Image 1 (cartoon, one colour):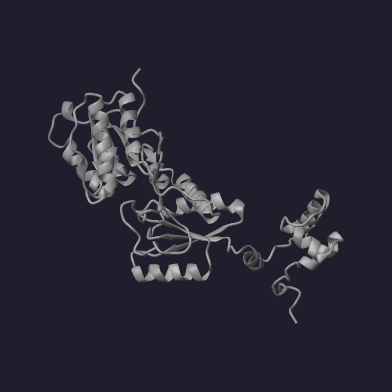
Image 2 (cartoon, helix red, strand yellow; image 1 turned 180 degrees about the vertical axis):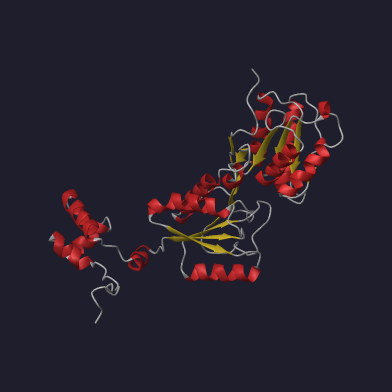
Amino acid sequence: MPSDAEPAPVSAKTPVTLREVAATAGVSVATASKALNGQGRMTAETRERIRETARLLGFRPNSLAQSLLRKRSFTVGLLTNDTYGRFSLPLMAGVSDALVDKGVSVFLCNVEDDQRLGQLHVEAMLDKRVDGIVATGKRIDRHLPVDLSDLRIPVVYAFTQPDPGAVGLVSDDAGGARLAVEHFLRLGRRRIAHVSGPASFAVVHTRAEAYRDVLKENGLAVNEPLLGAWSEGWGHEAVAKLFGSAGREGWPDAVFCGNDQIARGVIDALRERGISVPDDVGVIGFDNWEIVAEATRPPLTSVDMNLSTLGREAGLALLSLVDGQPAAPGIRKLPCRLVVRQSCGSPPE
């Protein structure tokens, strides 16, 4: 026997049954079931009393039985190849936020870039009879390494290339770039450089085109963007190119960066050269990766792609399809927002 000093062994508690709820509420099992499922004819007072009894007892409906009754599993899958979760995790939070009040659960499967692994995850989701799938990725111009076009359940794409005729949601990268460059203009900056990532990414060209357009619309000189890697190291290299040879009067007074890592590298390299941010040069990033943006010195102004909102809209679109409501195919662009911190400075007095 255990001594007085030893804790009692842990054992699982027996779930509260529908019969216990009915007995406590003083009704039949059939009436209790109808009350909890929103069915049957009874007074509002009786229905509420039964539901309150179930809540106080800690009764949890049998989700499998409910699924069989309603021909729904009340689960959706989220497929991604975003190994680090940089984009998929905030998006998943948005999907979950949209569906949790509807009693729908979301589970995440990472397919990496493995077609076989992706197919295995899809088959597992189908075996679990998910009501639908949200497909997302680490870039918007590449399709996941798995074919979702012929599934007999709804699929919504978010932050990844959709199949033809499917519903897709992406952030408005051109609009986000405009927010950054126009903010610099309001601050009185006129010599604005653009440093971005690899030319193989579609968003690099989308943001660069918007950058050029805003400068042209305002009659300002346009320098070709510097393209490199999505890294702090490239930010350092870019500063050497932009501030290395020309005299101070020819230096940019603002740098719009393609992501927050590049921006952080730019700020560090400017500091090393004795160039003040934001007094001499303003810097704006893209992504609003808070762990990077808020730890940068000074804290980094950045374009936020509103991934949680994107996920929420994807979840609602999927739920609509599951409920049998048609949706117009094609890509919807959702607006970005600018999160202003200290790295871009204040308007001139």
